[in-house]
Length: 289
Image 1 (cartoon, rainbow, N blue to C red):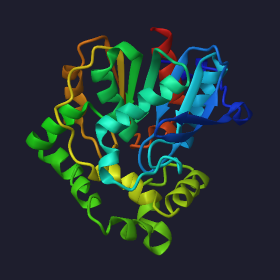
Image 2: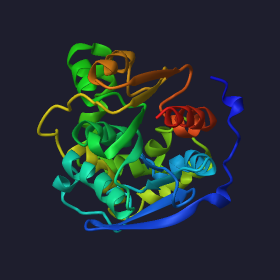
Image 3: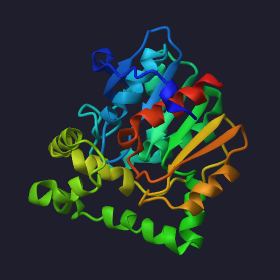
Image 4: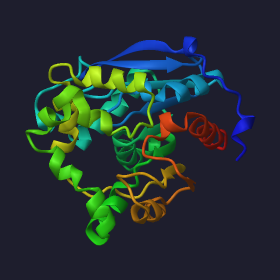
């Protein structure tokens, strides 16, 4: 695809700051585009925030979509419960629907990166009536990932951090020496100013614990099922967390229209490392639905 054909509509002045009020609390969010535009909800990952979608939100808004990216549970200060059980997959999927309901969206396009994509896979599998389409960035289908961890030594090694991050000492280790470990995660592929923003947010009292509680909440009660909604999966070859076994197996977990796009020589941080390319892929996918 010729990404040069996509206009560079990334004027930050088009970004709005929103508060989306639900029964769980008030989610901070960024948004762009006309109120009557086709709705697109974008879910961030760890250890980031809605800001990771700034380029995509502005681009989608500039093309007439109504794009909203919330700071998810634990990242929005007003939705930061202390109980680990309050970060289970069912609760996180419930937040997606609650935010959409608060925005008045009966059906919407869903986009997710990292943990946001994992939640998106579950939402797409369990609530296909609510989604017009789904785009997963980096993270494969949860069942494909689980199978790869069991059968593929490479993926098992890549996923070893999951056990480590559930330990109670993780917060101290990540924030030690001016959050050196947290900063290294971004592999120098995310703009420094953005990294500083993420570190500042996660240095707030209780913020990093809340983000890590997504990992500590335990496994879902059941295996994620097949996804019937039109799905685009974008994976990058230099992703340290997700190898090719789970990436290539993901198509077996989508029963509806499916497209797979592989980005060569790109790391895990796709939305910020190659923002123009990702925005172009999103526009192409949405235009076809």
